[in-house]
Length: 229
Image (cartoon, rainbow, N blue to C red; front, side):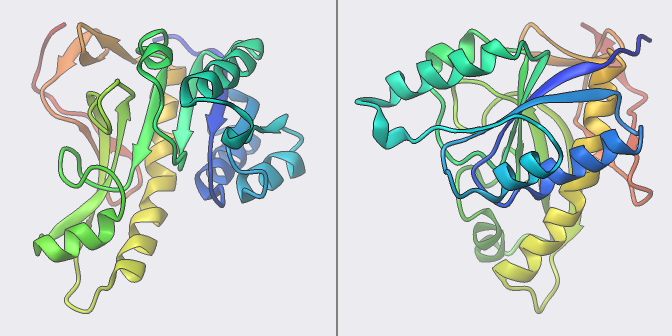
């Protein structure tokens, strides 16, 4: 197992609570990482304010300033490449990424999605879960692939769906678990224990049969059954 200070870039469109969890974990020496840039498509995003308050370089780029989505993504990732990240984290980034930019960074870009993938891809996931009548909901971290929310799933956090839940209450409980899920998953990345091999998640060099699960102690449970990668 190796430990190094990972350079992490974050893509975010919203309030940035997952970004704040990373800022706090790094500040408390829980996570051996350096945030080298926060990038957003929304100049008013709270994530940018959180980054600036923590002394992290922050940049907003408006898609409306570019003639096409491909042109926007090309410029966005050219700016990300300037900070030389080891890992790019999509934490509440609400735009689809172009296939060319994703393929160029396969294995170095992850996304946190508010559902137990492969269930409920896309938007309005909490409402989707309620309408489907599921007993459990949660969040997943996966490698980004050209398919929307379709890359190999690394880890998950689960919450029960309560009888009186609405989308707001369910979403708040999921978000609370997202913070620990993201920090603990990134800890494994910084330790060199997680990688993408042949489009599968490898942990300590062996293929995971199922995603890592966040336990009630906010630590990831490591499956004992794994196959050679």
